Amino acid sequence: MKSPAFTLIFAACFWASAALAQHGFASLPKTAPMPEMRPLEAPTRTEDTRPRFPVLLPVSKEDAQIAASFCKAVLAKEKLIAEPALAAMWDNGCGAVGQITIRAIKLKDGGEVALRPSALIRCETAELFADWVREELVPATAAYSGIARIDVAASYHCRPRNNVRGARMSEHGRANAIDVRAIVMKNGRRFGVDIPDTPLQLLASMRRSACEYFTTVLGPGSDGYHEDHVHVDYAQRRGGYRLCRWKLPLPPPPRQHPLR
Image (tube, rainbow, N blue to C red; front, side, top):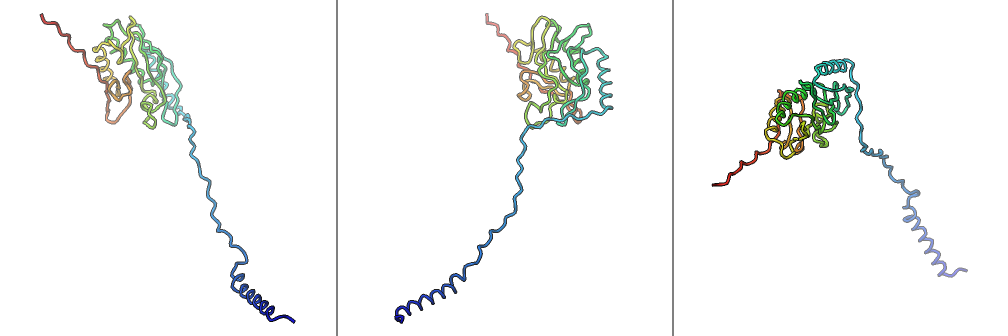
């Protein structure tokens, strides 16, 4: 026979189990909730920072024939010692159709003015440069034994203006410009915008005539990029606008004679 105490303990355990089943286990979910599905993210694209090389563009047969005919007519005038260069146009704006490599300018007396190094420029600009040398530089340098050579700083070069990234295409990139570093006389003397003892009268004559012949002339004092050479080109602008920026050095002060 079970004691009253045992019966009481059994009854308490029974009712506790029943209460837990009703209020505890019954409130627990039978299965854990699934996490919310997130949409798959598209893979992010990384920018291609590799340098892009320019693509050569096709040149129409008609354009090539017109340019070749014009260059042939320029060379027939015998102002230049030059060879035709292949037409090349690139999708970044560089290149030209109708260009030649100039080695020298032929003078009226049969002499030559060498270009060192040779210059690659368009035929139209090349003829203009030859006329400037023949008609202006030759007489301007006669008093200094005469011009024998032109030291070229740059001609065709695919680059932006002043080599500044993001700037507009330079006329050098269109084979439409030439930079003169110095002119060398027959007696070996070398004159230039940054060469001491270059006669101011000669520089003034070069500046005046260059600004008459070319649509762009840049020298010392223009923009900080032409302090040691003179840039000339034949850029075509609206309204025939021309740019002549070349600051000549100040003349030396007059000598003061001692008082007697």
